[in-house]
Length: 470
Image 1: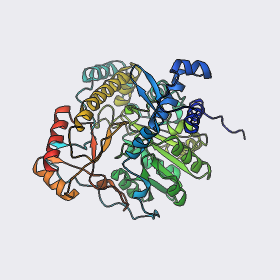
Image 2 (image 1 turned 60 degrees about the vertical axis):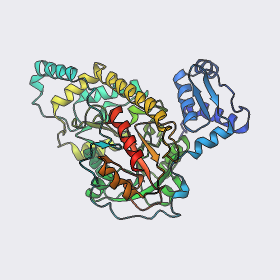
Image 3 (image 1 turned 90 degrees about the vertical axis):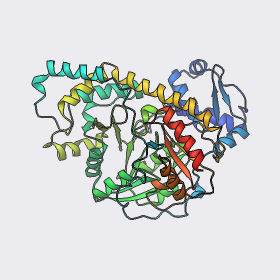
Image 4 (image 1 turned 180 degrees about the vertical axis):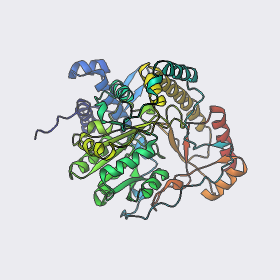
């Protein structure tokens, strides 16, 4: 079998990285512009931008507004890597399997009016007038189709709209027949379990999303956990585990906000290739809101083994109440899926599916996402300088890639006391340790923050309260 060619962006990335490491490109040296680099290597500017953003994310170069791209000095690179919140030294030597996670985590302060870690998305900027207009049009034009039985994979109209959207935004061609529509990612997780087999052992990121662990426990599937550092999961722990399925979010891990580095992605793909019974479930819920590496390909695009199940949701971009998610299956699982679910109907109403398809095809969805991106980017541009004014931080966050980030606090109080003091001031705090799926060592008093649901005034007020209780 012919080996797949190395992606063009990765070839350029490796070339520049090698030149920096070897000293051929020195610290402070300016790199060619994207256009010049594209002409030299006979590639597109998008390919060059992808390579540059990967180098920025891994601390080799930096981008300066109106000046271009520059190689970081060795001491600048050292400072950047020292700012990683989680390091392998925080974890034990072995990574044993642990029993299922206890019942869902219950917030310690349900009545708090400021929750700095709330990751429920904004809905106040959603174009409800446009959505309601499209709903009226659907009722007028397609009323006779709204009561028809739905295909188990969802309406082909919506699956085709999603395929076109993925082509425009990720540059990848997806067969609409491989797309499955479902009422929320939880439902799609249960389908994925049936496809990979209930006998499977699923590896989860740790710290991670507790609800995900509980969903798999409810499906009677064995899970294990893989620790993280600043580049993503630690591949040596994955190799030692008995897992044959890996569930990860390489484009924005929760709760750390970590983006998986290129070499870790390659390690995952190497693990996948080593056994034909292995699969990756790529949970790409935050791809639309990556500020530093928005053009990096999804793991599914890099998987020439054809064993990655790609999952994304519209609940994070439109509204949590819109329970529409989608899954792109590898061709190797399509036949099994059709065999298992041919007698089922789709769990999302045709009315919602027709409306969402029109919303995507009309360009409204992408304009909405762009508005949210600008909002969140402006949020960070305002908040980050404010953080430097406070002296209760062990270190400042840098190069925040998405909507979640970690804030290490400087205080003589322990986490329990800080939470209690926060409740007394109507402030809810969550720490990194609250998201552990199994016992591992993590830095203490690292607060998990999100800019999803709070406005700037509330977030700033929360920081002021934090300053008082520390």
